[in-house]
Image (cartoon, rainbow, N blue to C red; front, side, top):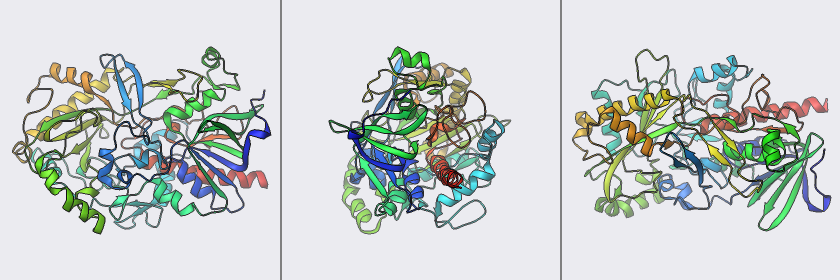
Length: 544
């Protein structure tokens, strides 16, 4: 079987074609182009990362939801969230979601990766992946047994800490929650300030950290505004990628490998559009089947999140307030001249990892505190100041899927996180909300908070559950739709090669067998660092 195209459509031939210049794709472009004998092509559907709101850390909170740097996906109606459609923002720009995220640097727990290995993902245990976390990292705290320096990705302390974030942590201590000054250290449990992917007070996306240093290499070609339509095959070997740039359909050939790094939603979509997926599903869309892989798009996992919102008259509360406007010009000048001040804030400055019950072996919820009101992903605006605390379940049991809604490559996939399908996820969210209410009720916070939005100050369980179902949604960590493993149901093997075809790998968060306990950007970068070494080694083996 062949789904190739004529040579007349081809604009170039390369050793490696990488689809997606996001958190993983930028890493791969840098590492694979280190070998000047290899020709690398990087395709990105979005444009350059020129928007100043991307680079000023506080700016991401002001990027409008309709911005072209955001894919602005929506889920199918969620049956356990009163039929609401969830919002799934993803980066559509060089750097991908690392260009629009909150820059929080979290690896997850040791048990996450040891669990991957125990489940059949050989070579992905914590001791093995730690080396790649350290390779990527330039931690401003300096090197030690768990942290690296000299890597492309700058990991730094926050240059500005809002007084309300400090009050939140003080209140946490007042109710006897443990403190933690390094969530990527010996243990994860506790409350503290997050480290961030910032350099000199500016965002350090993977476009900044990895792609910019490699741009001038003669063997690296970056094509932006290029939305992939399908991978081409000769029999079962990947031979290139067809993409659309403006109104023109073009293609690139891959003499070595095609690597998909387009995220948990679009990578399974692109595989299915290319004929790799459930044969029955593909046939309903009249797509020729290259390989019957029923589990492509299955196993979708995401951190379900519930945000508790409170009004605040504090002059430190961010929002549409006189004090914020008065501080605007001095704060902007501090940022421009010295890389300091409120514009360097990532908004979600403080938080932590907690056990909802003492007998839990690991923390099961994560908190993100914001000294401002962020309602409905920032799409719903409120006058006046306030605070937000997000509660997310770290290891959700619910599983969803990504399927095709249409064979049109320009159409969005059908995204179904299936949030709260397993009651345990709801119960842990509820217990987390009660902990946050305790923090809000402690003296350090109680004195600066006003009325809550949507619910009463001391809600009962039924009121909290209703509010969770009415407003809960993602905290932007979808993974797992092209699961890695040694079993027959895994989509990719431990080398991240797609099973059943040749010359095709997937490298991104969607290869995770299970969701890590925390933010997913740092683990995605680690995955790409490790994959780059695998790809290089495979090339050496073929040449030998």
